[in-house]
Image (cartoon, rainbow over all chains, first blue to last red; front, side, top):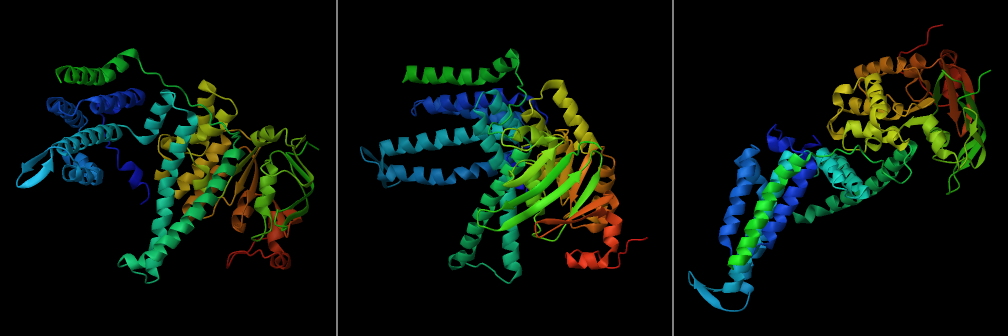
Length: 254
Length: 245
């Protein structure tokens, strides 16, 4: 059933983290990731602290180990690329298990792996506790231009429709005894991708007509503004504030 | 006689590639009427609808909605007065939630606050989809999507509601439920459909459009009894179906 793809990032729940206003969560996650990125790579203790914080949040949100672990897999290509750094970077070499590795390459690898993993974990917690429509509302509340949030909304809305069309096309192909085996058979897929592109373009026109028919004049109507209380902001931002403190300490101790 | 909700005179339209879609269409729909618009594929039904709410402007002839002539300047007012529900609800439901979608039209009209809430609630209630308010449209069944699409247009409180193929792809139970719901609406209706029994059930009068011209405007039952006429314009009743005298 179409619809599973987009929904897969959210974990239904009723924890405090789920109920927090989306704008405060988005701002907190953003500032937290900034702090992580700004931390000097040598401050290993600081990354340990961040990891405890994010894992703690994931546990608090009752996301579950499996849920988080499966979604972490998207980072694999970056990790694989980072694993090459010690072999290709120059500078001072050290011997690890008989292999000559670059010292700065090893630090680079650690830097990428630690920061990317923490960043992804943060976004998994954010997406896991915030439904997409709520997330868009939060972005609106943060004064992200309506055009951008509208585009995101459309993308999410029609991703399912397009994927649904693609899977129906695939079923139709296979029903006519087409069984894709290996790369050589990719041609029909490429053709159907082209067909999907054209169909989506035409659908875009129909959606525009439907919008115009309901009075759309080039400006998305502003949604109701939902303001978060100061106490909510303080609660949400206390965490990135702590992270920034750790970042400052890490630089100071360097 | 009252001012017609829709008055079309001598409307003609040719697509940029030279295909004539409408040639001299004339029709009137009066307040409170329920009219079916019938016709074979390619008769120009969709093109006609697009003229009724100003998506297309007349190349020749005129369209007037409750006395207001359609011109480039008053397109927005015409769109407020004429609500169109398109065939594929996936084209119509583009906002992230049902509520946001039903709010889209009224917000474009400048409504907000409690007035907006009232409108949205009323439309959701009329289509019996109140319990779907916070759902994303992609998680709805086809029948639910169609209802929400109608609610989104009804929330603009148009003077006339135009439905393009409202029963297509619905199972018989959903079709019957939709008919009951539409029957309860207190709105002038123009129903474009291939579903002749549905037209008979909903609309006392029917217009037939063929090759870009209105070829009949008759009581629906009379029209559906005229076998020769139906055949001539590629209209067919379902097998075994006959309209009683």
